[in-house]
Length: 257
Ligand code: PEP
Image 1 (cartoon, rainbow, N blue to C red):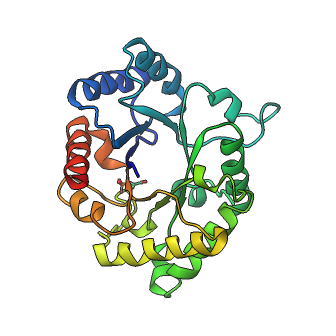
Image 2 (image 1 turned 45 degrees about the vertical axis):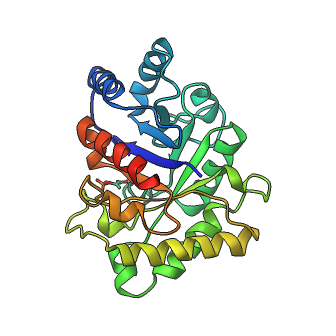
């Protein structure tokens, strides 16, 4: 299985800055067959970066992801972007990120529709799941993860489940969250195990890449990447600095060998 190194730029960088970043990253990174490098710029920069990748025949080196999408194809949905509008521009879409869930009030039902819409449009959904600090303190991690998978994958068939990537992101470990704490590899290992167990319970098979995200940086990335059942990383802060992001890509290759 490939190792996925995914950078979520969130609401950072203008279109020009995004383009300069990509230019720098393309100069820095090596193409490693077993490593899938994905960046998720803001929606407004996607088209520019897509053309930039095409122009330099670099689509194999770096893939694009949307940070969100809407599940209807077109119509009166002010401010939203549909799968059909993203087709040909992105290969992936981050869905159900905790910022979407807790700042913008996205519900499990909406998330499941987005996952299904992405699959219909041949965009690989990266479904984010993870417990909040309170849920963890109340010992609810297992229940939350199982519930979020059950509801997020509600409309995904046995045939399509292989098209989904799961990202485990404990909300309390995300660097931009007030009072964020670093998750220990043991904490992460247990949750990753729960996720794989739930996938097996729901689909009688478990072929999905599962990524970890939460305050990953070049010093701790190796420890997370070597946890059994972790197939890559989803990063916010560390993806905003091209040198750091590239260092983590190189590290992922070394860990794989
Ligand atoms: C995220 O928000 O998905 C994330 C993992 O952020 P950070 O790497 O900054 O903790």
